[in-house]
Each structure stands twice: as C-alpha cells, then as structure tokens.
Amino acid sequence: MNPTSGKPPTRSRPGPAVALGLVILCIEGYDLFILGAVGPSLLSHPDWDVTKSTLGLLGSLTALGMPLGSVAAGWAGDLYGRRLPMVVSLAWLSLSMLLSAVAGDLALFGATRFLTGMGIGALIPLVTAYVSEAADPARHSLQVGTATTGLAIGGIVTGVVGRALLPEWDFRTLFLFGAVPLVLIPVVWRLVPAVVRDHPTQAEAEVTTAEPDEQANRLRQLLAPQYRRSTLLFWAATFAGLVIVYGASTWLPTLMVDNGYDLGSSLEFSIAFNAGAVVGTLGAALVADRGLLKAATVVSFLLAAVAMIVLSTPQPRPLLLLVSAVAGFGALGTQALVNIYVAHAHPARLRGTALGFSLGVGRVGAIVGPSYLAAVTVLISSPKAGFYAFVIPAILGAVLIGLLRPGRRASAPAPAGGPSEAETPLAR
Image 1: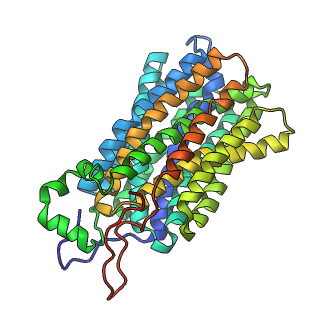
Image 2 (image 1 turned 90 degrees about the vertical axis):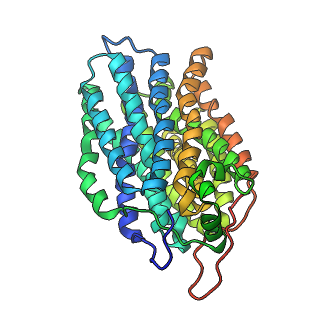
C-alpha cells in the first residue's frame, strides 16, 4: 500500500525489527531442521517402518505446503500489511507442530508436516519484507541478513536439543517446542505496523495515479518487461538454492551416519553447518552492503559445491567440521542472500509479493530436494553420492545469479530536498 498525499510513511525502527525477525526465524529454523535431527530416530522406529525413501517423502511433504504459504502470505502482506498475516502464520505454525507431537501414526505425522510447511513458507517472506522496510538503507543487507540468520540459529538449537535428548527420548517430544511462537503473537501485534507504507518515487506515483488496475495486479507487474528477466532468474535461483537447503536439512545427519559417524557426531556436523551459515551470512552481508551483493551470492553458491565435494572425502575431524560450516553458509547463507537480493530489488508495494512468488515458485526446489537426495542415495550405493548430488544445483544457482544485470536499488528514498530517483530494479 502507498501512503496518501501528505501523510508520513509508517516505519519501524531497525533494532526492534531485526530482533523480532531474528527470533521468529530462529523458531522457524527449529521447525525446519527438526525433521533432519530426528531422521535417524525415524528410520529406527519399531512401528512406523520408515525407510530412506519415506524420510525423503516426509521432507517433500513439508516443502509441499511452503509454496501455498509463501504466495498467500506475500500477497496478503502487501494487501493488508505485515501484522495480521504474521500473527495468523505464527498461530498456524505452533498448532501444526503440536499436532506433530501427538501424531499416533505415520500418515497423520506426514499430514502435520505439510501443515507445518505452510506456516514456514508464510513467515519467511513476511519477516524478510518487514525487516527490509525497517532497515537502514546503508546497512540494508547486514540488517536483513542478521534477521535471516535466525533460520540457521534455529538449526543449531535443533542440533543441540537433538543431541541432548535423542535417542533416549521419544522423537515426537522435540516437536512440543514448536509451540513457542504463540508467545510472540502479542509482541508482533505491538511492533509490526498494521499497514505497509513506502517512499514512492515519481515513477511509482504515476503508476498509482494513472493505472489503478495495474496497481492491484502485482503478479502482472512482476512479469511486466521492467521486472520480467529478474523475476524469472530469481525464481530459478531460489529453486536451486532451496534444493540445497531442504535437501541438506533433511539428509545431512543421515548422510553423516552413512559415512560412518554415530548419531551424536552427525548432529555435531549439523550444528557446525548452521553455525557456518550464521557467520558466513553476516560476513557476506557486510560485503553486499559495499555494492557487491551479486558477487557475494555467486561466490556463496560456488562454496556450497566445493564444500559438499570435500565433505564426501575422508578428512581429519576438525577439517570436516570446518567444511561443514562452509557448506552451511553455501546453503542457508546463499538463500538468505537471494532473499535479500529480491527484497532489495523491489519497492514496498511489490516486495511481499515478489518474495512470496520467488519463494513460492522456488519451493518446487524444496519439494524436489529431499526426494532428489533420497533417489540418489537409493539408486547409487556409494555413501558419497548424496554429497555429489548437491553440486549440480549449487553450480546452476551461481550461473543464474551471474545472469542478473546490475542496476540501482528499486525505489530508493530520495534525500531530503533532493530529486526522486527513478524506479529501476537491481536486475532487469
């Protein structure tokens, strides 16, 4: 939504927005990585007869709900503001995790993972858009990147909890922690603005005045000549990135077990994976704020490919932990950078929709990722095959981001008393 003439834009302060986004995505990261942490326990469940293919299917069911949540929440966030869709998504996610904790059979458990996926898919575009709008323009990538590291921090928490409680505890107990988002609902209602207001440029003002029908159809705007090239490239790059993210979140601990490590050791690798994502994302965001967002994203994709190759080879334990951290940056850190890129390339009136459709269409990669890894590990007996399967989407993602054309940030606020900058997407 755009402000009416004479009304100042509603804007959150960066500090509270980043902190709230970090906490929400930390909880979401826990919900995302919990399936990977309990994967070995599921495979040994005495009654459910879970196989590697079943584990891949459960990961794909989680991912299958994400496009619905991403597209619906991104559109609703631009139309109604971030607050209400965010509150609904938090409640949905909490209830879905509680249902997972009490699921009595595999079919019901799979259904609850689908519902959980819808909640996860909804929150990422909403939180990214909210923090992006509150961020200081000079530190945009760093502040949005800091919030998005919550996904990796949640993964670390999952690994720590999994190592402390498994296999002695029933794995479903770990899903009870997913009810925590309920306590954040009053905080979201207080801090998140009810409406989205932008700093419109001259070009945007003309669109708003002269073309109200076009203003209402945000998807049509994303596919218009001005944005079409970048939109399609962002969708494809998100697909490649989410193949890596969700393949790794579901399969990393199990792949480490297959390579001869016990459950505790595999969870250590998972913790290192997520810690690397946190540190790497913050470092890459600092580089990106110097005008090198595209280069940082390309390099992070390539690091994912290199790290997965090294992880497949016998190496000293400290080196493997270090490379696992690099792989975490190459997976979660890369997708965080792609999301930052999308948010940075669109004005507020399109930001939620752009993120929602980028993640929604790209979620096909999240759906394909776990089953793709499952198929590779089943068809190819070598324990190294799962690691090599990550290399193809990593290289593809680097190529796709490399095809983006550089440009100015969309809808940058004009300096006081100065002329407005024409709306120009980062990559057309």
